[in-house]
Image (cartoon, rainbow, N blue to C red; front, side, top):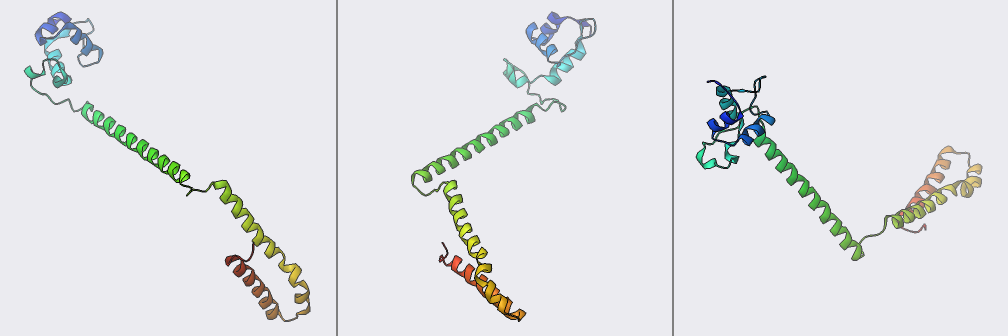
Amino acid sequence: MPLVGVAELARLLKRDPKAIRFAVSRGRITRRPDGLFDAEKALAEWEANTLHERSHNASKVLKMAPANDLPLENERTAKASDYAKARAAVQIYEARLKKLRYEEKAKTLVPARDVADAAYRTISCLREACMNIPARLAAQLALESNQARCYAILEAEVIAIFTDFAEGRIA
């Protein structure tokens, strides 16, 4: 076929010249360096690179699959599934926030600061009880010469402190 311009190629394809210029700008049809088209090559490129189902007269054109090197359908599916995943994540976080607000109003939640303060006070009491062991047992251990007896006295004192702590008697 001969070399043709935009208007003649549009007439051959039964399209508006704007559609041809748009296809050229998108790289679906290539021009020669002199600005003309090789009609046969341009027709083949148009068929291979155009989504006919999206055209205005799609009922008149056979459905063509996109070229293998153009991931158009996969790209659309990926974008749709990414959007669906993001939307689901947003809904999950919104549901969690609503649950937290409900539990806060129902008084089933305790502020983290209150929990931290209570834990600090509890551990401070346990630490004080342990730090008092030397003051309470120093004299008794000084009189003992038997190593096993010293060990038994210390062990009994530590067990008593942790048992009292576990049962809530150290406060």
